[in-house]
Length: 401
Image 1 (cartoon, rainbow, N blue to C red):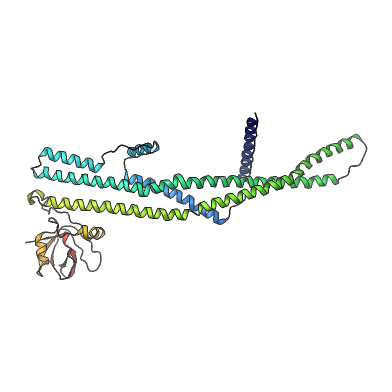
Image 2 (tube, rainbow, N blue to C red):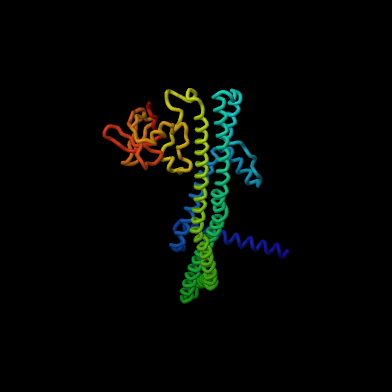
């Protein structure tokens, strides 16, 4: 019975507090009540936290789209994650394409040029699929998980404390309003007590009684002053304490940014590793395809190789981008030319825009004169067109007999 009484009293107190906050909030929106403003530093921290939350959610969701373009697969992974179960392994697109190529090559015949090429391409695609799977796993562990932990952990705590701060502020302002009303009632009560009424008739006596009751009612308000002042002190103390707790949590956002920066570096490194692996796989595939007879590789009287742009070679690094061993993009006659200082004619395979004044821009199918210069990088030759001269990438050239 006592427990039930306690629960009823607590429920009534909570309902009264909720009603008081609702009235205060409504009056603030209507401009009928004063509102305690937070200090500028705390407001800036709150704005920074909200901005961090919004952009973290956007980056996290778009990264998920980048790593897993299939929305149905993302939903399935989300459901398994919420069920705390491991999602079943599924074949990805490069692996599926690779398997189709291998099956087709097997049916066409591994001994045929086309069948053999399909099998080699399929094996490369499957290796790319494996690298893609490793990228997803690494990125999810080192990048997405920390972002998700912030949204579902740290920021959820911040939002909870921020809401509690808002409630404490409403309690403080409601206490201020009650104290203001109690003081006004006390002033009015003292004025009525000082007034004297004259006369003997019934109306005067009745009026006196009404005034007496009115004064007694107003004195009840006056008695609330002490109680309201005590309540104001309590609510002010609770508000200040909650503001300090919220401020300490919000100041941790800077540490969160530093942690997310480290995670971003891990994500970039994972992408760099993935693209470097894919590039190396394709270089190996080009070497394998370059071993086929030239009549199988020719297409519209063009060479079989696809040159590697210099910008990509520079980005990947000399270890992966070296063209010295590429049969299809660095023919032996170009290697022979680099060992001598003689001039040769060369046809341009692809358009090339010069990166600086030391290079020569090229147009596909034009014929220029090329020659080697001692000390020049192995991926370049000197090109000459009329009075124009500059460096040209060897992968864009085909020497003419």
